[in-house]
Image (cartoon, rainbow, N blue to C red; front, top):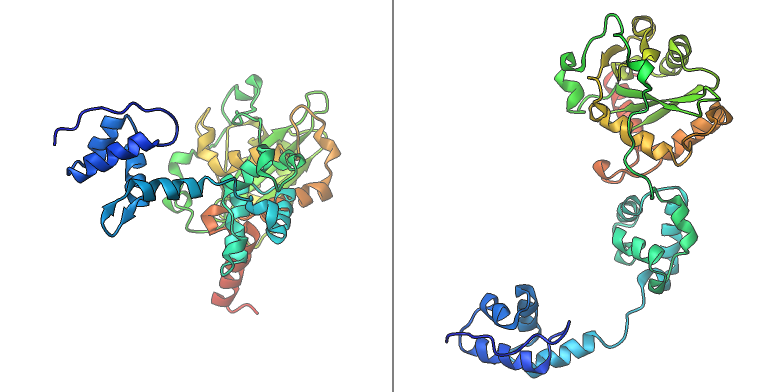
Length: 344
């Protein structure tokens, strides 16, 4: 059979005339792709219709029409509107500032044998933004990381003048750092507050786990202030979690030799204008802007608040860890290390 276009496309859904044409062409041995071209439809539309109308005697246009009508018989109730237990879990995750993907992934970890407690991230977004879908209050969108472009480097022009003596560049960093197989390798940077306040917050992210620590820099962020805060925070960690630190070439790291001596860290510097070389840190800084808005006085956020922000981030499930949290992954690494070294 030589298929020719004889039935014009009339709407979103297949009509009776199109089903008649599908029956005629399919009975004549024409494949789904050719039928789709004749009808001006996508191939998957025809393929689904052939499956929908399949009977023991082949394709039936009446069966296809009947099943299509049944599928469109009124909207189905949204899962988040009818399953109250599921809705409470989703709302709690969003209130913890977890993304819809993190919420959905963690539900599968927490309820592996209860499919009624599983929901996809897109369903959560739909419930939040399309109120007709029902379920979630639009006010929960304030917890989402939305309306923000990708974070750009915050180095000021004067901070790029000259080179820091004795820098070891990222090109000399061992391969074990890049593959994230060994814990104890960190990335660091500053989040700057308003110019008038001179405040900043130092951010540290462990590459293997995504574990976050924050440095309180309320009045200044020069080399000495960063050195003191960094040494104090890093020496809280066991020695095997202080292997290396990768930073950009900001002047706040001018005392890197003293920092290395005090902490045991090997310190490496990124190439100029290359924030992707600290990808984990850049991503974390973007998340932290939910807590530390741009252009504000960051001295307001004392050490206790900063520790609380870090704890929230460390309790968020991560896709790359099978939706386990950075804190859980780090605890496992510490436990494994203690067992291997005979520590009770």
